[in-house]
Length: 98
Image (tube, rainbow, N blue to C red):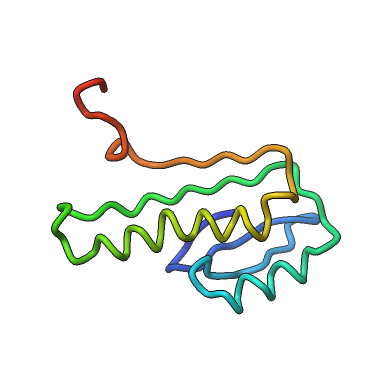
């Protein structure tokens, strides 16, 4: 799975792919139907949109792209694999301990 221009690409079954946006319910439902009988070796989600400041107007975009997208991914595809890897950025950790 990789992200390009707000689209997520899943690779499965000999490098076949499905394009979807994890913020678009119809896109998610369509992709879920296409892989309804499949089990994946792993699911890797690398959400990493970081607003410049907490007061930044992109805070909602960060929530949608990071939290809501992760919830949607796990809701529709979480049972497709026992291995789920969720990555983020250093911004989510206490900087004094890094």
